Image (tube, rainbow, N blue to C red):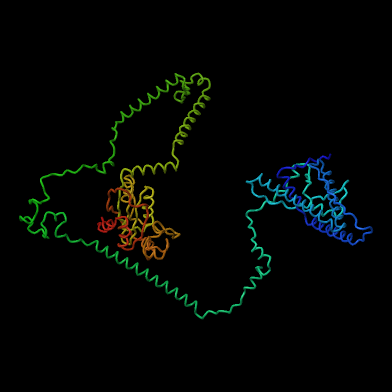
Length: 613
């Protein structure tokens, strides 16, 4: 009894192994064919051999004993199988040598044996199919090339002529045991993992790759064809360039004509705005009081020429009292101020408040809630508080008092510094105050400045508007400049003080030495030419008339320059989203810019404003 475990006779695994063992390899097939040829040759030689004493009695074929039902030892099973094969082979040779009279019996027995084996195979297949009806069909495993051939007793190999029959009948009766003695070693090798990102080669593509006629280099050289030279005509590209230049000139001409037409329309509209229209013959509010067909006020008091006392008159004795609405400006009225106190009353209130705080602190000290503060020693009460110590060592006591005084002063300054706001906090507080001031009502102020050629004046106008949180616009013009600002009441008041009192409009300053664009001249001025050319800063029209120097290089005379308040009032909300400037060479351009915010009448008011000398 060896150490190998018995092979499981039942189960799907045994059937699968039996099916794999039944498949023969190429080597076994060649061995079997060689054995059949040798057997046929021996039979032919035996048939041609002369018989000495008449026909020999036909030897009955010997049937091999049936294999044991379930051999416990694998070596014993192999020996029994080999003996059975040898017996069958001897029987076949004896039948062939005996003659044709006794040949049909073994043939019929052999056919019966094959039919029985086929029936058993079909029964096993049906049993496997019945056991696993829902499982998918499993492909047959590849043939094993490492199967050891049958051996004789004591480990002696079989003759090559017997290897064919042994390999042909392999898997029919005997079952091969496991190759290794452990479960891990008997597991089937895992299938190699396929990379899903690698594209599978299609049969057509594989055929193209294998066929040398589909090689890329061969295809490239095969498709290459010679072409004849094509020469460009003389002047072809010059004509194309001239056509492009002509098209650009036409586009520029169209753009210039459109700008001039728009400018002429704006000028015409601005000229008409100064004309006072004639009053109508009948005002619209009097049309209901005059009879139909009457187109003038002539003799309107005559009976029959009015509808004042007639029955169909719109004037009756009834009085219509409309519903009273709250005035919108009432919400902007300031609240009542507290009662003003005299200096004596203010001191009395302060003394009473400090007395109450001191009594509360003393009560907490008596209850033990807080520690009593150290005595506040000064030079004036030093001898009274520290009398005995001051007499013994006055120098040390004075130094101690000086240290305490310096410590109290340092603590006081540190507390003040901690309470002080940072730059970001101050800016946020100012922004909140401006927003609260604007919530009370939006104010509008319009100023006229004769000349803004000084860079200092433009900087003051610009930076103060930004610091006060104002929005609006500055219209730059060679003859007059208009400044419109809007914001809270406090901001507008501070800006009015700046424009009317603080700025010295008669003073002029020299330009910066680097000759860079200054305030309101370093950005797109919005003029028509500037928009067409697409320039920014350099070359803008504002630099031409907003320069502090004249044609001779001298400072301009601003002795008659002044700033006037054209109009001031309230509005429901801001109409300008930001603070900026525009350069307008003509009155029409200025009105066109202001028409977007419906303030073009401010330019007319500023034009009609009489200067004050």
